[in-house]
Length: 423
Ligand SMILES: Cc1ncc(COP(=O)(O)O)c(C=O)c1O
Ligand SMILES: Nc1c(O)cccc1C(=O)C[C@H](N)C(=O)O
Image (cartoon, rainbow, N blue to C red; front, side, top):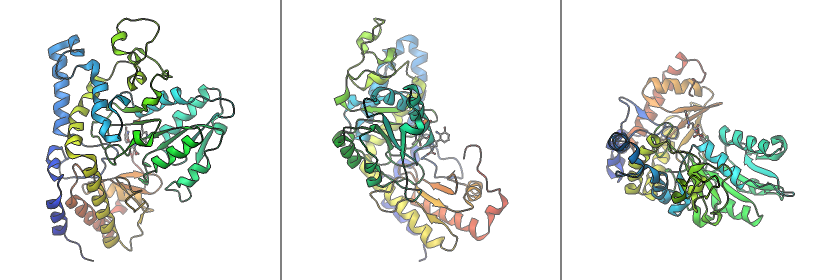
């Protein structure tokens, strides 16, 4: 089938989210398909950063309680704004720490080995930071991670089967930590079923939402998930090093934070400076120290856009973009030995496409040189993330044309087939 740019432009004209694109800084002469690693800066996020700097100028120490967004309550207020993205109640979320420190906090809080139940269940496809954190938490409790961290195997190297995960939920498992969306293949896990199965066996379960928040809708409260954590620099576009989030199901409110600090305090008690902690009676209890205000601020601007666009609409467009991308790849790149390695169906397909090729590392380099920004994931994956808020169907069409030219003209052969420092 012949495709043409007009078809892509028509799809853009029908797109109800198209106007958000002009709110982002898109690097000049580039098609940015790496928003699942680092989202782009929006003008609203930039404005929010400027406002935070201004409030520091204007109020100094009084910025904690004065101004439009008093710093003392910002982590909780951003939690309120994040709630619709994950289907949670406003006080079940706090914006704090980093993905990895939040996982440390939640494991320190909810991993309570007892009797036979001493093991943690994870998977072999999760991002390494999560596995490192879980292993170190096991070591802190005196357990050997080689025996106590059980990692569910993938049957195809890309995806996890619900039944395989459930089969590992033995009576030795105390805690389960899994991704909501896998970082390589983009597979969406069935968080609802997994939570139900875990609870039937008396196991607590939490999810890493780094690749799912802002990309797919969630109903964490309805699914009764125990806890979750995520970064805000990918689909939420809050910038490099932006402050992360955590969710704790309200049924666990009052559980003593595993890692305490004075920001775990009930707000009104914190400045009493007692040496006995009175933890907040909501997710705020799982904060530790002073919030990183300047890295929290951009989220104020970003989350406003999510509220306006709506998660259902974002997911609808995202599925159309990845669907269109896969269709073009199949039509235009047959014969070049590419393999679409992400799940194709709309229930388990996340926000990006994983294209595999034995020359992937240097094809990524050639794409970047020709203005398309993907990322490379070992050993042979090219991740392409068309993001609903700022990518267009025309971006997708042009990217495939550029990739076709790279393959037709063997332009990738100019480069070594090796990843860069930041892949
Ligand atoms: C699933 C997942 N977990 C954790 C991280 C990283 O954690 P942190 O934000 O603490 O660097 C990433 C990406 O960097 C990720 O994709
Ligand atoms: N956090 C990152 C960073 O500091 C530099 C480069 C990339 C990242 C990422 O987020 C990678 C990402 N977690 C992934 O899905 O591979």
